[in-house]
Image (cartoon, rainbow, N blue to C red; front, top):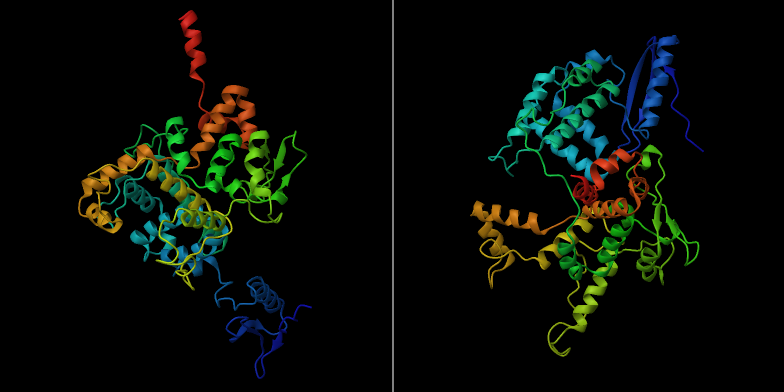
Length: 447
């Protein structure tokens, strides 16, 4: 049964109304003056104070929580707006999206952290945009010049922060409305660099990397190629989420969490015979609510393979299990995160296509020695980055592979449904490469 709220009462010896609240965490008590006793205004403020206290898990509300917005905004600096917004955003957004917000907010604090938030206008935001275009080689770490599309996204995130502040009555809405007047950068009308469009992974590079993936990551890669699913949709796959209608039909997998879940859009991934064949080995001897693709399981299999390949007799060297740390800093989890999946693919790419000297590791050189050599030679680091860019791929590119193949074989609508897009325009413009061979064939005949 919920605890009764503190009562509205008259302060002894005064004609004033008061309520005393206790912080649920610190146990500190504070009196809140409500105004003249037994007046409508004081009773209204009492209800506001109690509502604020309850909505914040019975933590004490700040004394100024219901002061007028104009009065509050007079003393709020940008740093405080950023701090409050980040406290909310880091839990509200997905980790990858929260990380991009963090980059934008750090830049805002660097240039305008101590400025009054109410005075942050379009001219200040334009100056930040120029810095995004220019980059900063002297920063630690150096900040490269951002691309046009990324700059537009970061500008929108900064505006979103001020919109949030206005909705929480920290700032007047006029601050956000003024910032919203800035138009996004347009291709060909700005000095901001353009990124190359993301495309499918080449078959040659894909075949080189496959043997260097562990069983779990290789299964995820194959499933992405067959279904066009996003990485995050497959990482949380469990048997309980799959509708298995028999071995001769298509299974339906409905992920609990996916990109558009907050929009209340359902996502269904269709698993045909080849996809079912990949999944079935992971279904055996596993609880129905356990994740199919587990880093802990992959690590256990790796250790077992190392043990089988051991050449040192068991009577010499370490015995199995004797070097296990009792309190390790990091342990393998029960499911892959998007970042862990990404890193596993990158490591496999580096093993399949090792960087050659001089920017690659030399014979007998340790990893730390190699990294120190790169730090003192910016050109070697630049050459290494260029090599890795040409010989690495990331999991989201596999979605492009699947979309292009499905569109070529079965048309744009089939690709849209497989990729889970609400509009075929996204499929057409971003994920499914057009089949130009058809145009070549037409031009061969009529051109």
